[in-house]
Image 1 (cartoon, one colour):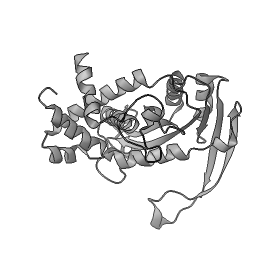
Image 2 (cartoon, helix red, strand yellow; image 1 turned 180 degrees about the horizontal axis):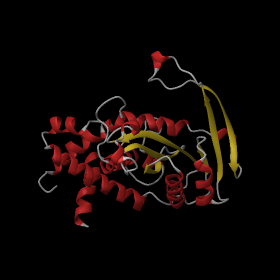
Image 3 (tube, one colour; image 1 turned 90 degrees about the horizontal axis):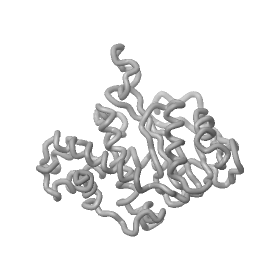
Image 4 (cartoon, helix red, strand yellow; image 1 turned 180 degrees about the vertical axis):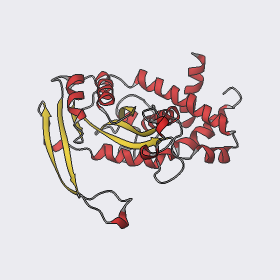
Length: 279
């Protein structure tokens, strides 16, 4: 990384956070592919470390969580027999938790859509919160046990369960299924029905697909290695929280959550590398 100037780092980071693929970033910046990948890994790790240290003591009143699908190496149905069960091959899910008021992404985790990942996700979320909060999730059953273990009775927890049409027109195979209804159910505590929703976190899913090339469907831009996906996600959320001004809030989520006193620039984001290297 010492071979890249500060200006080059900023240019590469700018291209990556705006949703460009590795190869597109190479063409735009003139930086070698391996160097771009190394910068992604190093900067992603620095972003993860900064988030883990500073995004804590949150006073969120309404948290929404969801999971978004992607895959590494190949889709689950195409995983070769010799790679079945290997970590980082096949379906991968990114779990996210967003503050409905400040739009801050409090935490995330990349893993499977299973009970172990749900527990790790919830314990990490609980460790970042300073006060009792209301939590809204979808109807995934693994949330119930994970939330109970992580929070006990110190949370107001509800799920919003949606029903979808069983059959779809074959001509619309890539369109989302039609939602035919939904209902809210309280799981623990005293959740306010008016705030039981996953709309903000579902909108964040769209932001992820638009802002990270490797989440784009029906392309060959998917992640080939799990660690690269993890670093790309960390870079995206650091940029989203600290650098990207929310149009409704007119400030960054980090500013709204009192985690920053100004909007970060890309140079400040890229500067996390220098801080990491000096440590």
